[in-house]
Image 1 (cartoon, rainbow, N blue to C red):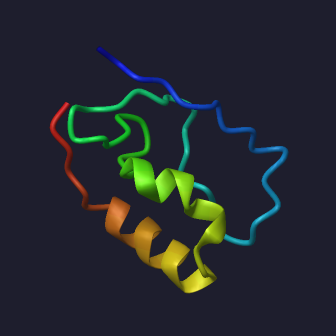
Image 2: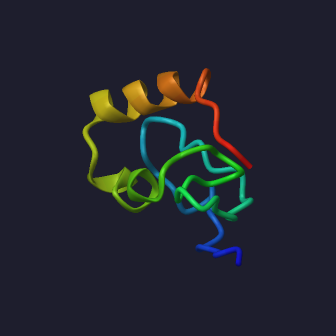
Length: 68
């Protein structure tokens, strides 16, 4: 049973650090997005994170593996 979230609007995002969303909001059973590989809590809290936390998440996503 796939769950879908909002579609990221890159024209609305005015943050300094790139949002890793690729517009494919489909989740694994472990609540990881199949598109950007972020956990659901990382997606929901993205705009509450500090710049340093966003940089750390983006760095981690380069090597993160999820079971799809």
